[in-house]
Length: 371
Image (tube, rainbow, N blue to C red; front, side, top):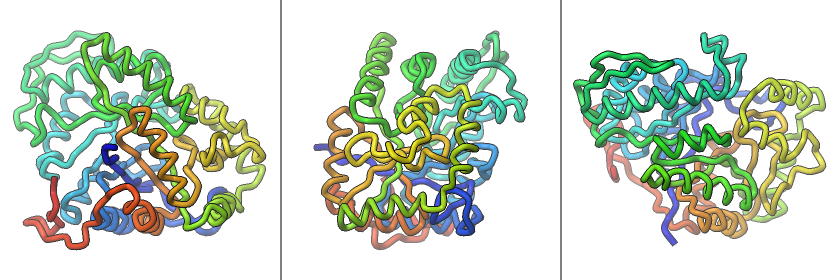
């Protein structure tokens, strides 16, 4: 079986030992995020996801802060199609890819929270956002491929747009993307390199993969696949489930009610599917063997975790791999300690090699083992 790529997550909105309202929060300072990134780089993780939301630090600035302190790990940065200029963001991507010496990946984010989007000046609805993203990516991909582009679209209008300084990766840094609606699957089929699903039961993931694969084939394209999950791995099954319960020990009914009200306002199909897994109920959180939806009681976005001992978690990961999943984008609370724990317990079983020595590049970062 092909070795999977394992990414970790930078908690740029804050970190914690417990979900819900509690006093154990960690502020998302740049030094703390750098500490997680350096740890993940040395442990041998393949990539880092830097998220985006109104409560997050700016992902491009966070990514820039990692240039001098990491040397081999790839950096997956949010590309916000609704609030960025296609041509300007292409220049940003080319520049950051040069600074990271070819380690940049882009995560296309269309957005699913209408209130948050409105605060950024984006006032059109779900399907229009995807139509706008389609025009954005047409321009973005073509200018980074070296073309001069003129487009008179409904949402994007450019005249003789071009990018002068090319990225290291050709024709451009790979595009990742996640979305569960038909419009999202169409966008993935036309433009992206890796489709990311949130952690649903295997049967649901299989259906999504089949649909995206078929739509891509109709476009004469192929798409690779990844999955976004949390992970709670301990030496024994009992310890892992105890850790899962401890993570939500401070979650109150009021916390859940507030989160459910916020989710209800969103027009994200993916968020709807996450909510449907548990329905806000504490008594139905194991939604498939070792797939636990407790995180989604109060956290938007990816709300499920693989829970278990190392051999069991490896078996569940292999089930996803059998469906076509090649990349696992993982996280755990708190992210610094859980990055270490997951690597120690799981990497030997997954065939991953730990990077024990990291050299210093000309910018002061680590560069041994660059791929």
